[in-house]
Image (cartoon, rainbow, N blue to C red; front, side):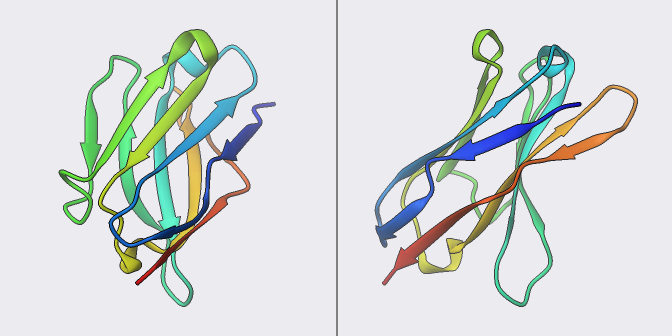
Length: 116
């Protein structure tokens, strides 16, 4: 069973930065696509960024140029560096691990609040 533990959320002023981390248990991490998603109050969960096992990345237009996803397979950890944060980035951020056979595992989420 895969377990994902996110950390790094918090309260920051607009224009500030945060780095989220998500550490996975198990031996599937290095062959899995990892992703960050977010859900604001009253809204659907949305994709923020993904990174494949080979390091290819994809991100939402709303965060391009501000957020960077990366991974360290030796530490079973995926990161989300968030710069130039805006109040509209306020949400619960979730880590997702997608196995090669299509099973998705989710973390418990970490709150990011950006004040104006």
